[in-house]
Image (cartoon, rainbow, N blue to C red; front, side, top):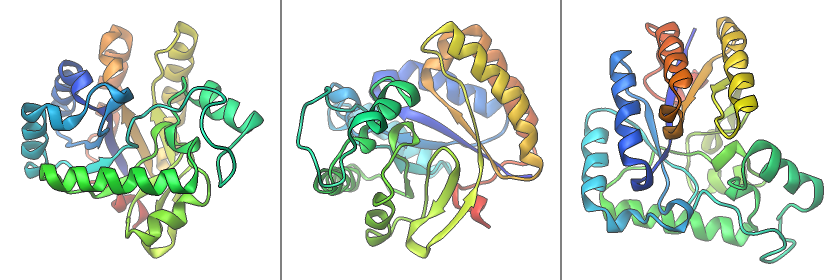
Amino acid sequence: MRVHVSLHDVSPAFAPELEQMLALTREADVRPALLVVPDFHGGAPLARHPDFVERLRRLQEEGHEIYLHGFFHRARPTGDGPSGDGRPRGLRRVFAQRVVSGGEAEFSDVTRAEALSRLEEGERLFRDLGLRITGFIPPAWSMPPWLLGVLAARGYGFTEDHLRVYDPAHGRTRASVVLNYASRSTARMLSTVAWCRAAKHAGAVLPARIALHPKDTRHPLLVAETRRLLAWGRGHFAPTGSALLA
């Protein structure tokens, strides 16, 4: 059994919650990958928070991988922006933005040109800030199929969606089960708790991904469930995301 742990939505917008989540992962003796958002919802640019960036550098030196996690982690308003060139419409967009996420499936809602521009800008920003990128994860795990080719051309060795992990640069992929909690409503919270309790047993045959979110720390139930889930994975943690492809 292999279990990879990641911490999503890493941004100055959630600095206190991120420290709480890091404390939980330290209890389980695991260094989660950090999915860093360059400018969360357009209101938390990394470059304006040097202390937070320095914290990320120290965490990377301690062994935490850093993945680029979109750019804004927010989709454009309905009907706004250009159409075509790979941008979804209709039911595909409704599913990505209302069912899978609360309007945060950023890379499910971009054209090819926009995707390339945001990747380039994110990469340049991370270089300027002294952060090494070891993968790209689209917000809400939602991306059009053509994005894999874009990532491959840019040399990315790891990405993932709801069902699989990928090495775009070498054309490798593997099925994987995702274990994460949603807190947008009580019904979603309880249903995801039930899912994680049941689906973790698939880890006996598939690599598992535990995806933690800073907002989970605001709910005592999810804090308790996170502790249980990390305790279940202890002793089987994969040191890197790409290890799930081995």
